[in-house]
Figure 1: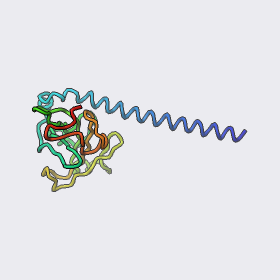
Figure 2: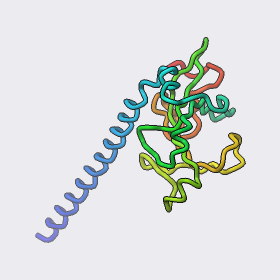
Figure 3: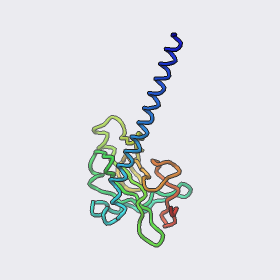
Figure 4: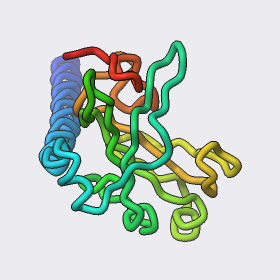
Length: 176
């Protein structure tokens, strides 16, 4: 009898853990679906510009790992020390063959000094911690935290990886 009670308790615990995992996975996909919905209008570059986003730096790629693409940054959002999962500070575009840009991802950015002044740990979204880019970086910015999400172009290196091998700055990325 005790053995059956223990077996039943273990079974219930396993089912609860499994259900919790499914709920977390579903919540993550739901969050990403909300992000896609919130940024869908920015497939149109003039709409992004009208919302305060503009080109920043140059389209960035690195041999062997792929590209980060051409970033369009909203300076007002970067200057705000908060993180909103539905309002990324940067939109990431890939040059299309023959001209134009294709929205492929987003990036959240917050200056380290601003964030650390109010928080005891680096920012995180979707269960992922932001990466720290130190001062003296190629962008000429003070140290900042960042997180990419490739929500409009699959990334074989992972949705939150900085570099996407399917993206190119030469308008030669995967046509899919």
